[in-house]
Length: 262
Image (cartoon, rainbow, N blue to C red; front, side, top):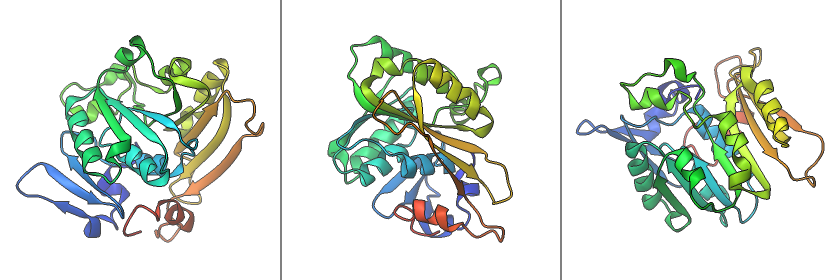
């Protein structure tokens, strides 16, 4: 969750974001769908946009998104992969209601579903096995988690965090299933080691740099236990801005199918 929407899309907002003075909702216009946002639910971020555009889920996948928020990641995946079925959960009632609304208003409503539940409740009920898990999990330490703001709480680790997703993945995944998550780059080594501890190979790493001379700030990771996957990890770097402040061509290419202006 690197940048809030006003930081992510300073060039995009003027063309695609309509703010209503009569309510706390706004509409973000993508090329093929519209997304309703609310002041009570954590809004679109660079992390979620890139995760939805980057993750290579399996063909005809049955996929689960843990912590849907607005639903933007699932909607982007539904646009990219016409044969996947997507099920999401979110523990916040406001997020569940907003995401459900966005799912129902989308062109892919017949392939999208969501429930309001805690992550631990999901693990305790009879489990459907999925081909892919995807999540943009909270990453701040729970110790300092605020209690006054739902949006602020969404940034903080609770029971849904990168390590808990990996440790419980066997419960949710088919034997050749995949995990797709995004973490701060300073935690990349830690999370990769955690995945290895549970028997997962690192299939793909994409590191995000704000500008060419900056250090990576986010790491997008795919893990699997599938021994048929390539033994060497695919690693690439995505640069958000060129030195002159214009969006980098690779960033434009990745998001060009979704955003109306880049």
